Image 1 (tube, rainbow, N blue to C red):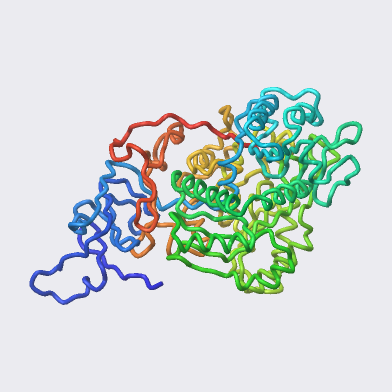
Image 2: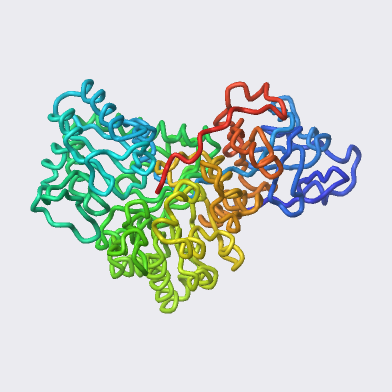
Length: 601
């Protein structure tokens, strides 16, 4: 899309259309400026534009930034139909981009049983009991967000800190129950769900997964990584048995609540880490009807053969007025999670010397997918948490880049990149691989990183943001929603403080600066989806996506960051979210602090 040309006039640094700047002097010059659709004034606007890093006012017309500068200069863009937003000192940034999330899963989780806040297993069983009382026999009960390391007591009896199934089975004899771990890499299923999935004491562990068993060899219900798949298939069979109208209503509701959740927290573009072809077709139809934010969809859930046959036809860029793009594959899961000891490491876990984690998707399969992605010009995103998973993924990328140098331009990514061997840190910059790292995971996981890995391994390789940035690598940020709340404020706070919920600092030498964190959520994320010419900074001619916050994230004391709230979310020049009372907000007013770090990965 052609960018407008702009010149600079006067001390207010008002940026005018090049056509006006070059016009010959005539009577009445300068001519009347085009009226803006929306003007923001009296703000603290951080543009990320080196030519005008901070301004007080900004004009928007036809969905794009028309001009920015001082209040008086921008006032000339106010016409009879211009909406004027007096920010009263509020802080404005380019729109925050959720760099790694799962859109439909987020919506589904918001309509399911929330067990993440439950203080212990007994409380979870009570929540399930209450849900069963409202459900019909045979109806599935689904909950998400539990994490045993957060419980205030260890269930008794237990296997590796995990409960035995008697209590859950007793309250749900006629309803299948699946309770997804916060990391997404494990599910606890009751006896009814296990039966429908065909899992019993004789079922072997699948490649890339494990079934947790008691001393007698019976499955207790905990299924790690690929071992979850039979239960997932059984649940999907149940969903497919519902009347078509009910299934469609569920899907539409999940999308609706997910979109509202995102814009209410300042997300203007959402990078979805994996939908299958069928869901992408449906989402494209929804995009044609209108979406309040922009979607960048990755393809996942398809076989290698289907990708080989159909990938190229799914390339979509800028559909629905730049609201819908499909040009990536991901996230391909190379290993599990640290919390479930299924992240794949070069050396055994310090607290489990016989375990090194698991390779979930065989690396040979990841190489096949890489070759298809390179052939069809698609970005590729691979989930890698453990140091071996990261090394093996970098090795695959390097081989592809050697065989096909043009693939360098596809901006391939490693998702999470949480634990690196020091010798692999420089390879991200050398290969041009983007490190997609969710800041909040560091503060959530911090309590057990050193116990799992040992102090030295944790210090040298755990969430090494500063080390990666020093090498010139591109870091992007996000929350992995619904694994974490999509709210960027706790994420921002963790990125710049690395402070755990108990106040302990987690290797603070690896923290980002405020500006590095802001860039990782805005310009860097825009670059990672090939949109740095349209998004990520506030420059005349770019799309008018921006956020208005109650506090200056770059200058406020760190202990006040968690009180910051989104006042307005603006996408394409339209206010898609306004916080109740935002118009009456006054600079300096504080909101209650948010709860911190509810998830451990």
